[in-house]
Image (spheres, rainbow over the protein chains, first blue to last red):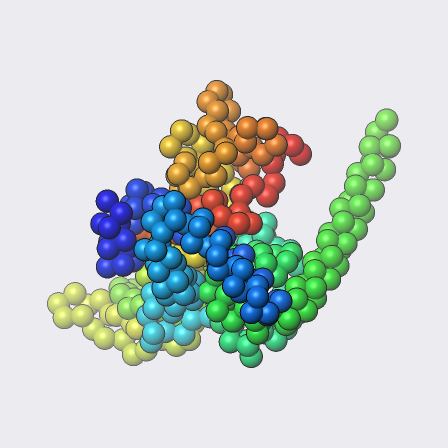
Amino acid sequence: MEKGATLKSKGKEGSFKGKDDSSIKSKYGRKVRINFEGPLEPKTLSSPKYVGKDDTPFPKGYSSKGGKGDKIANGGKTPAKEPQPLELKIELELPENVKCISMMDCEAASILQGIQDQMVTLSKDPELKLPVPFDKGLQYAKRGVHYTNPQSVRKVLETLTKHGVSNSELCVIANVGPESVDEVFSLVPSLKAKRSKLSEPLKGVLSELAKLKESANLASQLEEESQHGGKSTQGGKFT
Amino acid sequence: MFFHIVLERNMQLHPRHFGRNLRDNIVAKLMKDVEGTCSGRHGFVVAITGIENIGKGLIRDGTGFVSFPVKYQCVVFRPFKGEILEAVVTMVNKMGFFAEAGPVQIFVSNHLIPDDMEFQSGDMPNYTTSDGSVKIQKDSEVRLKIIGTRVDATEIFCIGTIKDDFLGVINDPAAA
């Protein structure tokens, strides 16, 4: 069953069934964690002693289920398999001859909001009605927005492109709004390969984003407060 | 994730729409035909944002209809494998739960929910940790990772997981 599952997933990326998924995924999840702890220590400490120390517990933990085979699979698979899900696919799946730019949720929200506002003025014509996916899309884009100004977010994130981070990866980072560097690497595994190079610039970017987020929060809070203030005075009038 | 993308489509128009308003008619028909549809390749076409150009019309033999090649920009929403999404739970059952991120439906099987979360039946079915600190029920917001998509001509169906680091409930309506 295991063999079948891995074969299938290799042969045909697109065809997914519940069972195959879970077996792949549970293995994958475990590996992620181990990989995560592994290279982190030796890299930050970068002394050969630690590498040696780190090596020993590795097979031990794994020897209970599969031992050597698992270790080999672990070494060989993670780099080959993990970068694939995120960026490669996206360019492959969309036809090459069309222009295609991935957008952050906040950018999408501002565009869609603009269309909706425009639509309100045109809505005398009942024929022109925005479809359900539009509303859902707008709702989704607005809900996930952590920032008020898409351009400034874009500007902050674009500093990462020179480190080889693709546009779609930038968008995922913006949409998720991670708080720590570890979170980024865990959620966007394709970046792990560049971990040593990326950690520092990422830290800067995240703190910048946190500032932007805070200012956005403040703005929305102020807005809410002013609304609430209006309401309470109204309420006061009624009583 | 949302994309801004340029697509092309042949619009067939009846001759009664010709004349001064030809362009407007083509655009109106395009919006009616395309917005809100889902193509497996590009995802959900959420909105058309602009027309790049409209080519020369070609008369269809025998019918009198004329087809115009139209290049247009649009915003599409397409999930892809490995993407992290924030989704709202719409239904919970013992097989797992369904969640919605924009126009896309995502199913998270109970195999892909952390092992320490148990299914609780009742009029508000949910998944809860043994200490009761984390609860997934209808209208919860979860952060999930898409691990598989099935794409066919008219719909996109996703399988997601919350069994990984930094995934799971981000907002619990019961606690709020």
